[in-house]
Image (cartoon, rainbow over all chains, first blue to last red; front, side):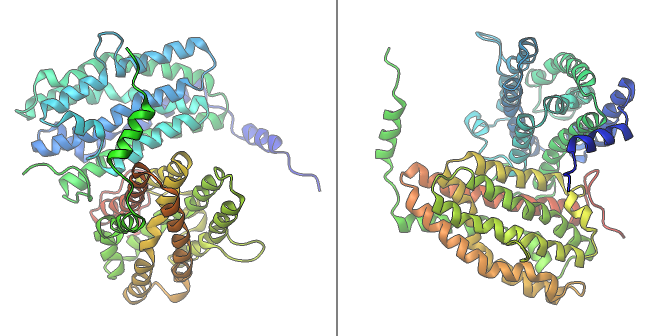
Length: 258
Length: 258
């Protein structure tokens, strides 16, 4: 019996489903936001609406630190797989944006720690991630693993939730300044900086994905990567909601002072 | 300036904290269960107490399938790192237990699918993991990654939650048979089989860990690995509770028929 040629099977499938046009593909990527982005999550409405107490905002900032601190590792994992020097150079500024441009420029992680300082959290405790929810750690580390293991264009596509970020950052700055007397302009520096960084990054990544995902299967894997990344963000808010709004704090995690 | 020798720092630290005795080390491992094992989780009390409806039990079985199906990959990741042929042979039976001993023996994953069949779930849907909670997938894949990346003895230690499993399996068999008219003896074959498999496996792994974790740091990393694994299990029940008891079902995941 002749074994089935996998290449032939794949090429037949691609014949059946031709690639989307560039504009259809872009629309499919952008359509994920209104379905799945975490600005739809109840915890965000509470956060932006000034409806949380200080302990709940601390829990959010403490957990979100895990995400922030994973980002440069995620980007380094991506760079470690790129053979094109120009693309590596382009991507490297993301690491610098988070870790700071040596010698003096403060990066996104330091700006996040200014926020957690401002909320009265001990910096070593935040950095240790000891009090973080396990669900947060699993989600963000799954993101790093995804970028390390998936095809390059799919890994790149997982960054495209940044297309949806500027709106949420703007809402957050105004909502949190209005809603909480323990938040001031200074501690929100992270979000203000991201207002200019995120659009530049997402535009570059979008063009890369639109150009390099060539088959229908690759295009679909890229759209799925955006959904995956929305899940990474959503799971973090689900875990916060369950622990600090519904009150089911898992053993061994941060408990706000009463 | 002479750079600090990292080896010297490590040896000083080991002098400061001598290794635990074997019995102290075993006690530290066993102490994690009563603090962190998922038999303490409210979702388990609901499940075993017959307090869930059929849709909620379906959600549990569907999500737990992700865990079951990750286990042989986790064990293969472990085996892939072992140079000792005898240890590889010993560990391989875990893969066979889950995937089935060829040619005819049914394994743990097939037994789990008999349970999901019995609950009226479509088998292809279950296997696709399309309806699973993202938190579940992140948690179980973090377990596979942990075993792939951590030192061998620490990776092995993460399996030791099996020390706590027989009690929960017994409770589950009796509780679920009593509590639900849609559950019969046949669909609980998975748990009955684990009653004999888990103690054999955990006893072997425990002896391996007790023997091979030699420094205090290694011992502590092993105890932490048991906590990590408890978190992998706990996060799954937190996500089920939040979605299917509190009713916050994330976009794109399984919705029971009403």
